[in-house]
Image (cartoon, rainbow, N blue to C red; front, top):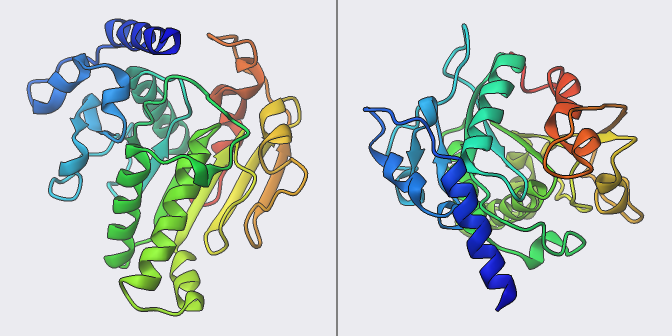
Length: 268
């Protein structure tokens, strides 16, 4: 009961403090008034436009582009836990500025980090479902897929990749080897990730801050980790500003931003 009350309070607080700027051409902005958990799996695009999960394959998603950036390819970003929709939008703008790539965000509305040690496949969310659909759609079109995520957002990405791989096997009646070959069109960059095990197939670059406890305890730096076949694990040292939690200077995206900027797959 106490947890439910705290969840409700945090949801209301985030919603009250994080309203996106209203745009006349964004019909879905009314969704922003809803608590963040209710927005799990929504897609964030240009000017903060918010797309309902049921519309992502029916609507042309307008990506966030800062400066002279082409529409393609588009990087899909999944945020970690305890992030407002507006904070995700701010990150997307910053990522586009730094990497000169176009971005959309798949919003992870998780309000608590929860059992961060829990295997990714034991938790399933609306954000995972949205990401699965978008990845599968891109592969069906014959397009390369670019993903960026950090912290517990890696759980969503891992689950989505596993579901896509299974879909390729069952729906397309492919052998597992062929599914893995198709998965090689997926490029994944993680920073401060909280997942230990990644499915083989995609091209991975994992950034691990030597000062960040999360990836060393729960991610690819932990005992028994599998970063994915032929994955690059890049150990860095980074410091960012202190935000709402005490480990944000070493775990927040700003600690990793200079290195993400140079990632293969994000720069064209």
